Length: 309
Image (cartoon, rainbow, N blue to C red; front, side, top):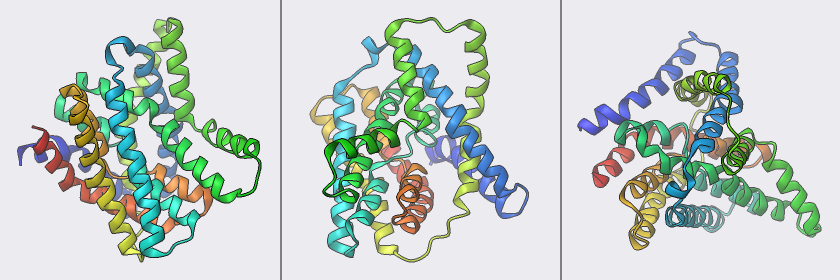
């Protein structure tokens, strides 16, 4: 119970503040859209760029962690896609959008603050390694499969161009790439620039959590409840269970193991809705899954934290 009070509830209270502020008309929807754009296009990319640029990759890079996390994620994408087809008879493009909801954990807006509160800022090194590959892997997998389904019969070159265009318009992917360039080349970040990044980064997570609450109120849960329940079970239970199994089998280091399981236990991120909206597929299921899974994760994350303690 103390874990719930000390670690999880403060994060969800900030989300709740954003939800209530928009619900009661204290903060406009247009303002929330602006805050979300600020966090997704500027503040969080700055956070990821700075973190990856300063990572000691020789010490923090653990392929066993990445294999555990992303093997689990790929299996969950497959389960969600095939489950939507077999159980609910959706067309393949809808199925892929639903599978993407099962794939894309909210590794930044929820995973970073909850891990930091649970285990301290030093525990975030493994989280940043997961996040560094998260958008490229998830968007790469989701967009590739969707473009294959949409462009059946098109040339491989056409599909490759469509995938690359979609990926490299993403600010998170660009920031991660720039961070690796600075890290690999050893280019120094001027002190005044680093201080400016620090100022923006301090606003990233609280502003993003507040905006997430304001965004969630716009998407009311309605219809397709069985499909939404399937997404919640895969994202909140099956994914962390798979990462636990693979991580234990591969003997992942304890700190990295905790970060991997905990990140996998996060609800689908808002990018799940962005992906569905980008293709105009299963938008209601995606939006409702983000809302319901985020609320449900208050309890499921508590259980995972207790199991990891």
